[in-house]
Length: 114
Image 1 (spheres, rainbow, N blue to C red):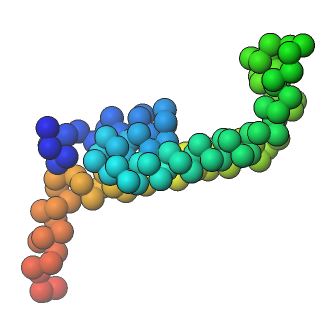
Image 2: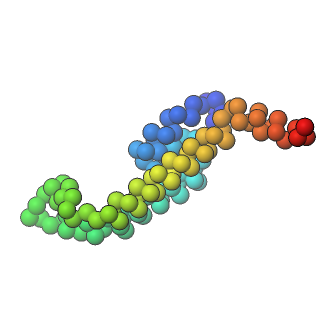
Image 3: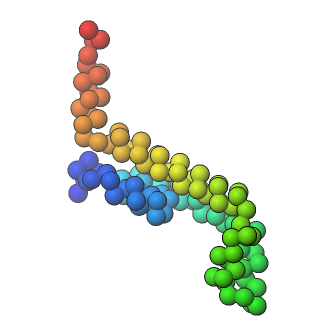
């Protein structure tokens, strides 16, 4: 299936599930890898403070990681902002790859404004 004949809508839930996966679905491999890398870096560096105490052997990892009192706003806001930006980027790519937008763009290029 070519990129133009493939439906665009599955890219949106894929991007919500994993940042960059929707880009890969649309054939934008480099862009998808960049979004995935940004998301992983945000989770790794910003969440390291929250999860640093999670590896204490006295309590299970899952119980410690789910203690919402220890989670700060920045630990959630930055990865969420990256996810929303990634989803917006997938939406804009989907608009440009829509079959109707190619025909509309070629008609606009040939019109003389009258």
